[in-house]
Every structure is written in structure tokens, then in C-alpha cells.
Image 1: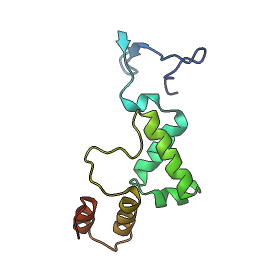
Image 2 (image 1 turned 120 degrees about the vertical axis):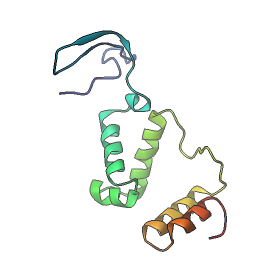
Image 3 (image 1 turned 90 degrees about the vertical axis):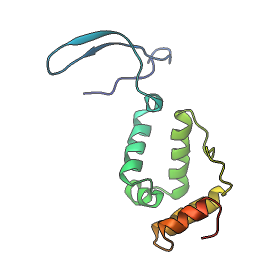
Length: 129
């Protein structure tokens, strides 16, 4: 079984799914279907990266050892995935005022057990722990 392409191999345009078929009962549906959400535009390599990211619970230090890549390389690949999903790295909904460097340090301290979950939340919200 192969993943359905999301772009035309000839012109690069978006592919339209027009038929779905059940493997079990052979029922078929025809129409115009969209591929699900922001993940639809990811390449197979990017989807594999996301799968590893989820398996490693978003911990880039675990991904370093699993992928045998440096932290900056993994971070760049993550940014590529974020952009492919239609977002811009570093943008947040909350505008919490914590710099990306401080956020990274807080999360690393939490991962290393240096601070508690509650302390990390306070620090990420810009409060003193």
C-alpha cells in the first residue's frame, strides 16, 4: 500500500481525490474529496519526521540519538515541517513573552527533572517559579 500523492507528478498541482473504496466490502464512493488537514501537504520524509517527533514525545534530545542528527539539524527540519503545514515557526497564539531560548531552557530543565511541571508552567507564562 502506498500513500496517495498530494501533488501531480507532471505539473506539481494539487491532486483531487475522486474515488474512495472500502477494502472490506468493496463499496465505492465517488465525488470530490480533500485530503485531511495540514498534514496533507507534507512529503513522505516530513511525515516520517513527524511520526518520530510524536514517538519521542516532542523531545528533540531524544530525536538526536534516534536520528543520529544534531540539534540544529532537527530543529531546522521541524521548522520545515511547520512551514509546510502553513505556519511560521516561532509564532504563538498566546504571545506569552518568553523568548524561544528561555522556552527551550525551561523545557530542557523540565525534561532533566531540574524543575517541576508547575514551575515550568509558571516560567512559560512569564511568572517567577
